Length: 326
Image 1 (cartoon, rainbow, N blue to C red):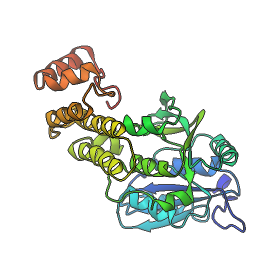
Image 2 (image 1 turned 90 degrees about the horizontal axis):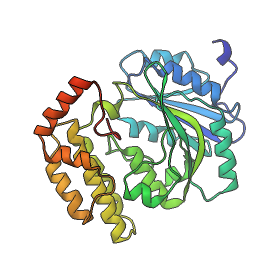
Image 3 (image 1 turned 30 degrees about the vertical axis):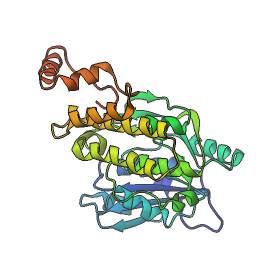
Image 4 (image 1 turned 180 degrees about the vertical axis):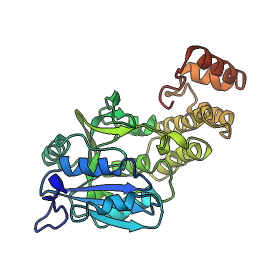
């Protein structure tokens, strides 16, 4: 296997710092690139790579077998991303863990050295995260995402999943909260970060060290609709009901959750946007922070606004109405 044959990542005689986890289901188009990127960029002799094959029916498993001896391959029946991540966490031996999506290749070895330096400087931290870039299906860079400095009030109040691709967390803390929530299909990562925040702060790495691939097969792209909308509200409702949070922050968080659910009407007519929009402003008792005037106007004047917007797109080409989700 050429350059990769020297990497025996999971036979260890001493503790390692990093467990890298990739859950994969039917991703034979990208999984080889991702595995090779991890083997290229992960710190030699200081990591293990656990790939959970979540019941793939394409050639994903055959591709993974080419790397046997260099990675740990665990196969299970199709149970979803959250279950796959938890399966890996339960056998992870690294002090820190990183979840790398099957279609998001690593882009920098510096991610690991920077993370280790920050964690060692501040033992109270439970997670670190870098800036990252969006790539298309062939790997061309489309956009640089400069993340926010960590603020619990911002993450909860505005429903912003501040840690993104490249986020590294303490494995033992993840196990304390029992990993990902198996009942969530779309937002188990956001829910995970919220629950992890109870145990310590996060720290931003102000460098572009990770990437996320946008393509038509991405779950966040193809499945936006009622189930995702309901889940957004459920995540916030559950978290604020089980945490000691001020009433003001609870109202802010839930109001913004209902608003983020309402704007998914842009993608699916099944979303009860008027109900969600009403609840958003009633609960917030003021203008919802994440709301934009043109978005609210679009929702209030449906279906007329939808016809107008389709005409504008047809006449002038692709345009964005909801910049954060379209």
